[in-house]
Length: 199
Image (cartoon, rainbow, N blue to C red):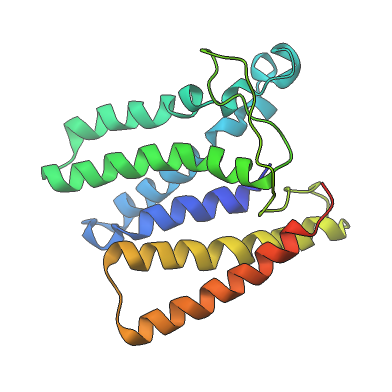
């Protein structure tokens, strides 16, 4: 599984494409916080025993597309009533949905645990044949692998999410393209490192 930091980075990347349009710092902070909740919500099975793997024949049902969209679709319904112009509402709704799905994408890219993506329609589980992200690692201050895996995760995600954001916003000047190429090379190095780890 990917770490809380990784899911938080995905949420921040989605938040950053629209942050300048928020009328106040408080509302901006609230929206960022909610995106982090949406991006992290599938890990609620660690806290709620009835949702845990052992209660569902070894399946992490919270890591299905249907479950990961419950809160985002609730958010879409709320946004429909409380936000302003249609174009801004549409972008916020898309960000909410992508935040929920980003959790599945990141965990899938770890390539360790199979995910029941189609639950409850199907109990089939899916896993990536290659892991381009490291697992989260045991959260322990003396655990070297915890810090190593966080470093690799940041080294992969920060450059890739930054480049994706810049491309979405249309920031494609020659100077920016050169910078994005450097970032992609850095991400490639960390991906190679991640793929070399034992699974």
